[in-house]
Image (cartoon, rainbow, N blue to C red; front, side, top):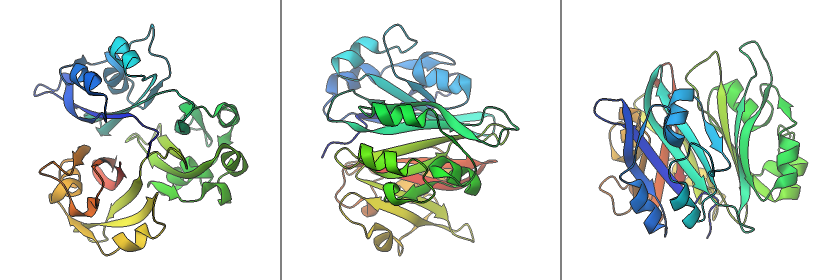
Length: 307
């Protein structure tokens, strides 16, 4: 099954915390692009990861040619045309930058959006930027929409301060683009708070089309009321609608397995079934990306994408 995202990377501060170096990545069959990427480094404000670090918020780069993107030739050879970088901060300090790379072709439909307010006093969110693949009409509609707290994926994430997953988005009363999403073939979405700055909130939304989902499974993990274990709050599966029930009995201890390590360190992680941190809960899936949601230096949630 094809997924909308073709490459996933994590870039981490080096030992001096002045540059970003390669942490880990998922490249599928793009072996040459992987080889070109593993030895790269990015200074503050350099390349896509460094730019997201300097700007302090997610960035969508929809054109690599004549831009600050450093791997343009390699990306072109790999059929990659768009990059999304999400910095993970704890207060003022960068923990890592997660990068998604996508490619334009007729088979890939879906959307990745960045929502924000225009000012600290603004009570509406709008699309700062986004990547929509082949969904041009849905993109045009989305760029004109303003939403309040409690509306849509980004507004619900804003209201709750937590990631929000909607399984059948075309039927959701709170999703004001439901009719347009149905027309575009979008079936599922998740909204994630991605800023540790209450003065300027940012939210990512990932919208999946049925033919090319963002991931095969997506889960939201939160600490239990006593902060002793992680529990699965919500889940989506391409192949099963009962994922949340399957996972509701699973718990994860801090420091144990991949998810437990994200909780322990505040660092995103990529792992797979050939890695020492492989989790049995990953089932037969080959790899996972887990991103922490941090607020005021504390873990609020972990979002895991299973590919």
